[in-house]
Image (cartoon, rainbow, N blue to C red; front, side, top):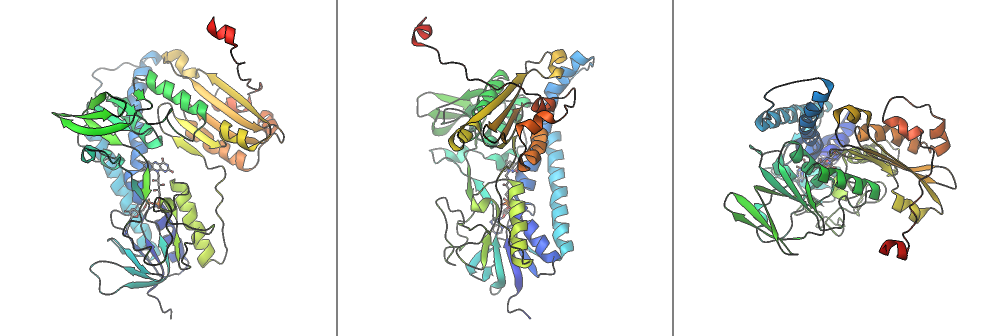
Length: 464
Ligand SMILES: Cc1cc2nc3c(=O)[nH]c(=O)nc-3n(C[C@H](O)[C@H](O)[C@H](O)COP(=O)(O)OP(=O)(O)OC[C@H]3O[C@@H](n4cnc5c(N)ncnc54)[C@H](O)[C@@H]3O)c2cc1C
């Protein structure tokens, strides 16, 4: 009989924690899990899932409008936010129950409370006599929105509160132009809200390929979103029914709601980790090795709390690798290459692999292939939309290093492209692949001409 209450105790029942707890329990291990909010975590309760449902909801307006050109007619088109948000919450409740049942079926003991770490093998739960002991502790506590520290910050909401809104605002200011800020800008714009985005950088979506950043910014502006770059907020104050956001550069913007989308912070505050000897990084993230082990041999961490790549499939894969390493005697090092990513804006971004800029830093010579075209649907709808596709190639090996797309179904297309990139696909192999016609994705296998950067404008021409 083991000297511990559990073989594994998991703190946090989100994407990474639930996966690790379930897999370990299915191997016959005694597993406990603590969750302080709702089982399912950020992705299911207030992240990917409810967001994607809102994205779907926000796209219908434009699609119904376009349908007129295809012969459909309708009267009295109205949008009702309470119906949408009620249905989204119902689906979240269903998934929350499903995740709970999954843990139950696997035989995982669930504690719906906050847990803290007391030592290398001990966890404290409030309202319980004495600590719980475990051979291994897995920290899977995720992250929370970082809020700007400015006067009036109490007026700001985060993405969490967007899922709790009982009514749609007339207008919103979104501070931050990362993927979460841009997705909510697109959702609100699609639902008829006047949206202003304030971003302190030069361009939206830092770290994405520059053509995607420029292309999405242009498309969002065309849809009426007021994107303001190099804009730093100084303060927020209530002014009647509205909030006034003052800018350091001077001037202000007013709106009925102000949302901050300015990054996420790992959840390690007051978790007792340092007391137990766990090293934390610059923003409080748990520092881990290739096997997700912290500086304490019995304490591991997966998912957002480690601040490696903050995405659901990554947290799930890290949770799986942890179980294989510890309980299946099959050590697994995570591979972070070719993680496909989407930005569910309108138009949508799908991207995998190196950006052009990263490839230029890493390779001696690269080739770029680019296509920009009107999707067939727009020829009838008349909508002013464009698709952009881009391939980044290592010119020496012919390997495809990156695929970047802006346009309809970009996420679905790039998920498939990610498989090819992982397998080391070359440009010649893309060229040898038969096109599926007529489709948007066929462009990926029909780009024949290298893109040449326009020659720089000469001094005299520029002046002319
Ligand atoms: C608005 C939004 C949209 C997103 N969209 C996408 C997307 O489209 N695609 C994608 O891949 N990713 C997306 N993400 C990111 C994704 O949700 C996270 O990367 C993922 O949920 C991380 O999983 P995790 O297991 O690390 O943490 P979480 O899923 O956050 O789970 C951590 C859990 O730990 C609990 N907890 C924290 N501290 C304690 C404690 N002391 N005791 C007990 N419980 C505790 C929390 O309540 C939480 O339930 C989105 C995130 C947000 C915010």
